[in-house]
Length: 214
Image (cartoon, rainbow, N blue to C red; front, side, top):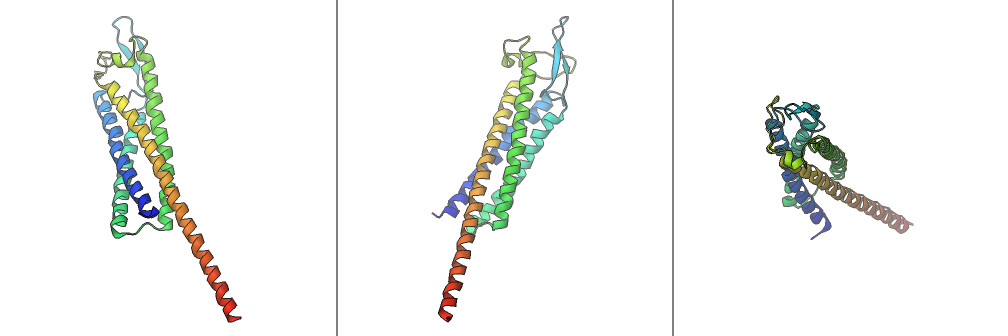
């Protein structure tokens, strides 16, 4: 199998993985916001009330949850488009152009940065929330399921597993885009090398023609 086919199949596999992982980020984050009545626990803080043991929450911006969800939707869309393109290339026995490969590199690098930001937001935001939870409970996991905020009527039963799944999805997505960026750059370098070979062959052919005329 030629290197081009191996790269193409690797990219198809990479985009398939990224598409699947987008659900691991979007679904638990969406379920979390539904359970928390539209609030987002990421970077939210508060104080434990001595009178009734409730947690008086100062909710952070919902954007901290909306961003990973929106990014996961964007990843899904890009992966669907790329899988369709590359499947067509594979079955036709062709591949993308140099310009298309260059665009793939730019998009992949941009998605690496966006997904890194998403992973950091989910991880650091959850750490901030858990820091307050462990002031009363031995661990953040034990805090899940306890009635800690009657005022906002939030459902805390599943927040720990939801955030854990979202963290996994966010970091795995970032890793998959790093891999896709590497594959795209390898393909671009391959095209550049092929172009150099063509130019060298053209120059050599012209030299031989000129020598023959002399």
